[in-house]
Length: 81
Image (cartoon, rainbow, N blue to C red; front, side, top):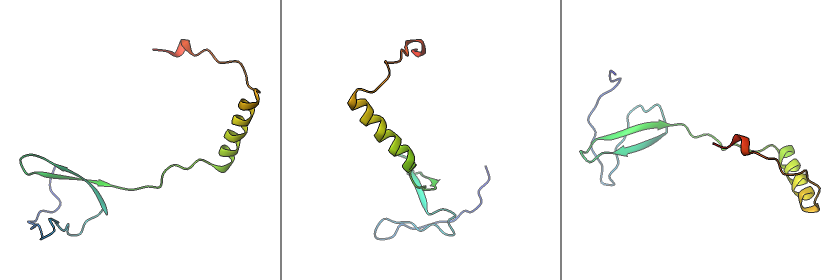
């Protein structure tokens, strides 16, 4: 793979390096014993949120289970490895 950019950088007093013209805000850093540092770009996304209606359905199901309103257990042995 051909390099897009190549430059020398110096670590500052707080052990930081500035990335010039970086395309990403966050990176996963991997340091190797030989001094090589590998940066993998990361894109942070909001965690998956459960819909309000789904939460209400789960709450109702739990209420029914506590009251004993539930079906017989389902046999899942045919799906076991």
